[in-house]
Image (cartoon, rainbow, N blue to C red):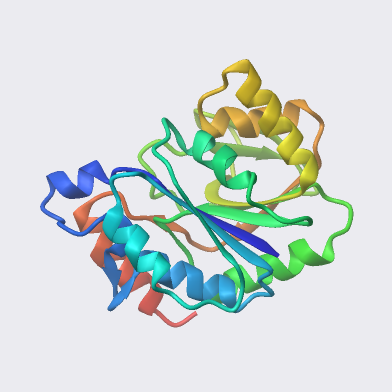
Length: 234
């Protein structure tokens, strides 16, 4: 599996609330957020790891360059206008085969991630596996509509009758998804959620894979919430 982490945001809300460390280096139970993600990925059949940080994150870049990993680390240093643009930049570093992408502040448990990756690797028909959850901890959640077989049929900005899931921010995808990404870049699409809508419009077979809980670290108060969550027994 090729893994990728988007860590190019400014983390401005954390800064405004008094958090001095760059978001990727904020510690959860003693471990920097980005290192926790890397450690999880390295336990699940990694082939490569691609990471993007912005040009102002010299401390994060130096930290990443100091790591010794069992797979190639492809580090991109570039400031981008959105997570979709960051995805585009790291996508050019991917090797062949399936890949799994997430943002640095997406917090999930290792055991749930293992089940997710195992299912994605074993499925030779689906174009993608999207992590979803019924736990809503996002300021602007992306609601997901699915059919009876948990195939994703729509991504919606507003809740709707019968809604079961929101996006968890973990994207397992295959080569056809990169064709859609290229088209989105060429046509000026600027948000990750609109890219996801384009995947559905292009007819890709996307499966929703439920996680019990996924949380984001956007505010200073989220740090303690995330620490408590990952410390709880599964």
